[in-house]
Length: 242
Image (cartoon, rainbow, N blue to C red; front, side, top):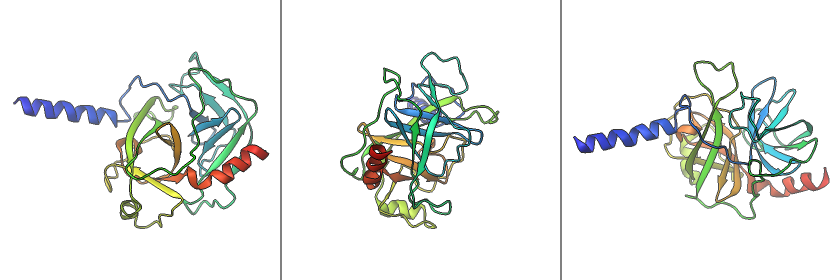
């Protein structure tokens, strides 16, 4: 009886941790950016006081950049910084028919004030090894009312998978060296409603931006990320010259 109870409690905690309907009090990582638009929102990562990285597949008409948000649906939060953007720069080789080169830089209209609630995330100086533990963060929707902004901040700790395991999980896609796969349960494919372009941060360094997921990232389904290290020359060139 005791063992059964312990098993139930442990599994309840896991279910809650990956349940987008579960309201929690998680504090978003200070680099996490909410990209609000007239279409669907995306998340991004603040890598410079003037620059945010996100996915090129994000369609962001009439974009507003929100930093320091816990609940994006609550404009009265105390530590918000809301700013417009000057330009969006997609990777030049990105196409909507591929998950490769899925990277975009957004230049803000003004420099962000860094504080306890809004901070930069490090860009990588080296590639991330397999089996590294990373944190993926994004917001989830209350499935009872997806017409409103997402209202549940969630994080999941998952590991970098070998390319072969990723290819097994996504046989209809060709997994390139410029892609990164993270997850725990290949092929599980549990649906949920979550804000796309979630960043993957490993040991304090941004290593991936979510490009494609057939399932639910917040339930640790395997997903494909743009490998940031593969694009560092392009990223640095844009930040320095624009």
